[in-house]
Structure formats: C-alpha cells, structure tokens
Image (cartoon, rainbow, N blue to C red):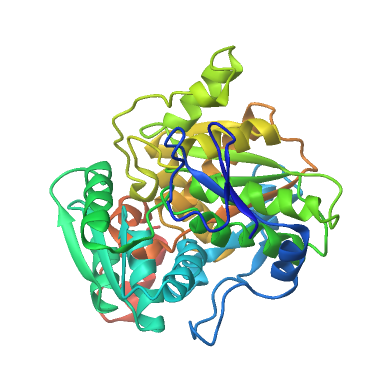
Length: 397
C-alpha cells in the first residue's frame, strides 16, 4: 500500500495515516497500491490461511447455459459466492479487515450489518481467535443472527433500521476502541472485495466479461468489483474493462437514483454529489439501506465503467429465486437473486446483446432467508404412505 485517496475530493494521504475517513471532507478513502503490490496480490492469495485457517474466496464460476437460454443469452455465468465459509460474498472483506485488526493488535472487531456482514465477521473472527461485536437491525433474518451467535459473536439487535445500527456501531467503536469493519468506514473491505474480480478473470482464462451484475445496497461490493478490474488493467494483465451493472430493489434504490440524476446533467463534481434520499423497504434485506455508506464510490464505478443502474420490484426478485435454483442448482437469497432479475430486465429493454459475456454475482445462500424463499417455492404435497396415493398425487399435478 502506498497511500489513501478520498473518493470525494481526491485528496491523498500518506500510508501511515491513522484515520478511516478523509479529514478534508469526511469522504470515504480508497487504498492506493503500487504495481508491485497489485501483482503480488494477484499472484498470491491476500488471505493469510495461517492466521485465518479457512478457504476464503476461490469460489466457482458456473456457466449457466440453461438459465441463459430462457432469455436468449449465450454466455451467462454465475459467480457462486454461496460456498464461502459463512455462505456469502462478505467473507473476503471480513478476512481483509481481520488481518488488519491482527496487525493492529486489536482484540475486538465490530460491524454494523443487515445480516451477512455480521455473520461473516463472526465466522472469520472466530477462526482467527478474535471477538466479534455485531450490531444489526432487529428485523434481520433469524438464520443470519443464528449464524453469528453460533460463531460466538456478541450480537446486538438494534430497535431501528440498519442505518441506526451503523451510526451506533460507529459511535461505540470510537468510544470503546473497537476495530470497525463497517462498510465505507473501513477502506480494507474494498481490498477484500476486489479479489472477486480477479477470481472471475482467472476462471474465464484471462478473458474479460462484457459486464458484471452486482447486487447493491451500501455499494461496497460494487466499488470493490470495479477496483479489482481497474487494478488488473493498471498492471497490464488486461487491456479493457467490463461494465459494472448495479442491481437494486426498487424499494432500496438510492444509488440507482443518484446515477440517473447525474447522467441527466446533475452533480458534475464528485465533491458535491449528494446521494438520493430513500426510506428502504425490501424483501432483499442484504441490500436494504437508506443511506449507502459506500455510495459515492459505487456511483463513480457505475458511471466510469459505463454500467447500468437497474431497479426491480420485490415480486421479480422473489420469482428469480426458484427460477435460478431450478435451472442451475444454485440457491440464492433475495439479494443474490436480484442480479438475475436485473439481467432479465436489461435483455427485455435491449441493454444486453445476446452474445455478451455476462456474470451475475450470487452473493448469499438461500438458506440465509428461508422465509422469503417459501413465499415462492410452494409447499410439499402431503400423501398417505401408499403407491395408490402417490400415483393419484402425480396424476393430479
């Protein structure tokens, strides 16, 4: 690492700078790496398995031919992050932060989360021998809370929204000296999430996809994805960049609204960009946020990459869950199904050509939110234990 740079005002700070946000404007910081560091990270996993004895990342990229054919796409892929240790994309970021915490001799690592970042931090901290402090909204799915508790984390369910939990975590971390993993505040989350781009590149044999579709709430996964591809080009390993598409629920669309406003002629200066104000309400809890904490970095990534900002209603997100699972064998939670719902919409609207290489990030396992999946999966038929009853049930289908 060479330095930190602010996403808003572009001010650069030295590598030994010991604050998380920019003192000039309060904006989020990005870690600036030189070419030697990037090449070393690309060639060698940045996740130290001696200090965190888990396999983090290196998740499969599946050719989803059957699913793609339903809408005429010839080159659809699913990046299946459901097989990470805590069953979500958040593990790369948690690992990067936990390694920083170990280097800083911290004992407690904190996070505000809608659920997945909390269960992820609890998992990775447990493997590394650190204590996790997890603050979530009271409405977080039971499965994610159970995960975090089982990993030994202290879990505090805040009466309020994710944004309330975030603000409380920020204040408490400053007050008690916890090492804060929370999105946006800690620039090393992006350092973990960028590795997903490198994995996709490797799985495609060094090819660059035409677009990567990312489920988006706070914006950190998306900004990390863009950074990963940009660093590959910086060191000369690729000569073009993919479009990074933002997939959001229509009930939590602050980033999409902001992109549309900027493309319509507003906010020409990054330092003055104001994120659209929303009150989030969506079945996709993992991407449900009022104020995206890495929003500016995500907005820049979408615009700089030429990507789309797509919003889909909850009904289409839920319908995408069994559609994906039945056609691919990959079971997504609602947020993880949102990219496929967005791809459907983009194809319908003529935004994606039939032969484009399209990668959807499947960010979390459907078992994390069974209540949502049950709304669309249906119920088993109850029959008597006889062949006659079985045959009758099959005939009546």
